[in-house]
Image (cartoon, rainbow, N blue to C red; front, side, top):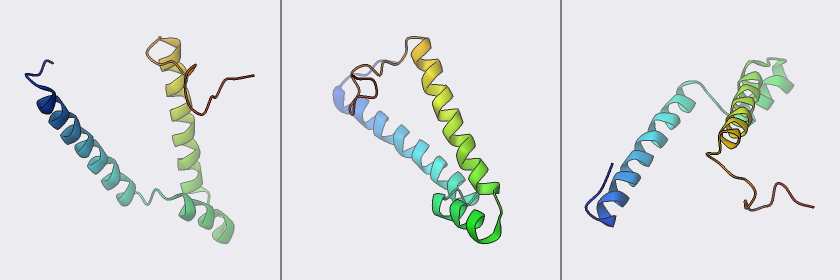
Length: 86
């Protein structure tokens, strides 16, 4: 995809980001995807359903980062804070 100007590229980026954020927000709202609610359900009622959803999300994110790094699409060597350092 090529753009005629920086302003056009910036506008497309912002609208796409807004669309993705809107969709993720709607899904999180509809599924009650809430950290505090997950811990509260586990402590007060013994229900681990939402907590397992959080752990699944963490696992998917970690696997995604590892796969992207393995494929060379992502480099965490210069990240801040440094995740790999002496």
